[in-house]
Image (cartoon, rainbow, N blue to C red; front, side, top):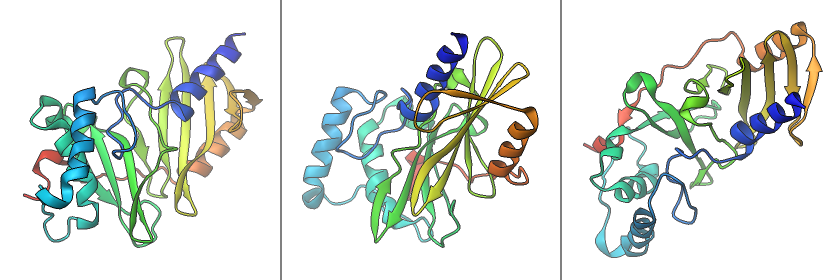
Length: 230
């Protein structure tokens, strides 16, 4: 029974549910951390964009193709204190020659959590909706490995450690596998159902190495979103 509950929790937190602290998506979606007023402002901004012009002008090398998405986030929060906790970074996660836009939030550079990932496909900016990360209390900030894998951790009060792995497939950031270490008992999580499958420690470590490569973590060049374009 405990394993069923754990599986449901892991599946819900890390792989399907949008985190309550996720950053604002595009103007056609909703998010828990943006107030109703902010969402209204975001929609209004999009509708009047052609007449009012762009609020943010990207500097050379700052991926101006993402300017509209960044503008939506900045205008959604206005001059609120939370805007000061939002950061952005560019990084070519899938090594296809085009940098992704990563938005994260945190009280400082050391605590920033990758919250939203945007890509450019056929000159169109797309938010990667399958990627989610759990509440800050559930685990440490997600890790981006040099091989292009993002790992999302979930830690339970009973000592279980859960790892959710995301990689790009054909231009889309997708969940690949979930692994659980339940105080010395090892499991993998099925992608289709919240079900734990017992595996050996050797298999657990093999799958972990397969997803993380040599374990090198990317040091992202996070910058305050409020200062974008300055």
